[in-house]
Length: 264
Image (cartoon, rainbow, N blue to C red):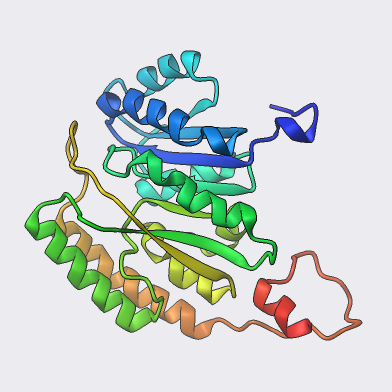
């Protein structure tokens, strides 16, 4: 799609990864419409991650009534982080907000993520992380998450207590510049900090799942979490942010916020 003028371009793109969430599509889309009215113009991209139910068809039907909504589909399931990245790649706004497609992240929280980025005049705020309060999950899931968050925070020093929350807002260009890997979404604070971006946090509410079933198990998360954590720890230790001297030849990539501060 092309835009006739700048006013037609969305200010914010909402991305929701979905795997077999047909029963949650309509309510989520309608709540996004209400919550994001003040952010208009905006768009929402629901990424169908290889669902084998009617998720794609329900998204398409909802889009006929809600013109801000678009669908992108994976031919087969690739996981939540890949679905988020697909949505970001198709986003037409410079600011992207994400939320889970299962309905547990209230869309009413989205303005908390988008507005700080839209209003940032310094250009150094890269990421707003939602941190859940009053989680509506099982005791075992809450305990496993609490343990994993404490271990991750100790190793990565990312100053975030709840990286598993699906509610996040960020600059599209910044997200696409960080290394991509499966389960990336859990390490965005550490990776944005690695690139010199400022990070903000907001408390957000959480709801019980009304339809469908969780796609994760505590055991499965633990198996991949150890490898991911060690990999991100290695990435953080190996990163160098060079200082660009005045008068140096220009380069294709724009300097990171930290590099800009070092030049000033």
